[in-house]
Picture 1 (cartoon, rainbow, N blue to C red):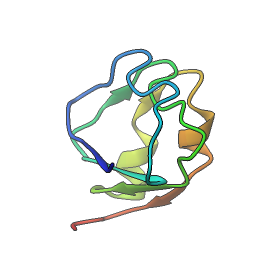
Picture 2: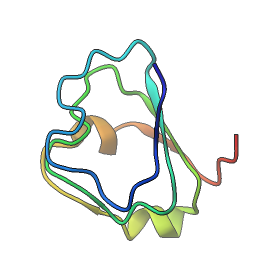
Picture 3: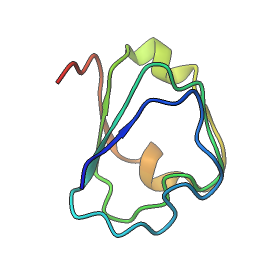
Picture 4: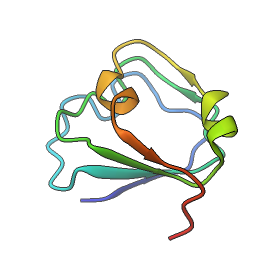
Length: 79
């Protein structure tokens, strides 16, 4: 399962403990905030982000998203 996320924000616990078969997600540069524990997924290793590193650093990422923030971020993804 590949999650392609393009809303402006995620809700709290959106993908909390989700049993993802793949270890990556795609996040659109339209995302401005990520709710608490929205991506609390142990298997998450890579994030494909459609924006720049500077845009990524402007996203408000709430607590409990350590798997997201510790993942490898691939910027300027257009796949």
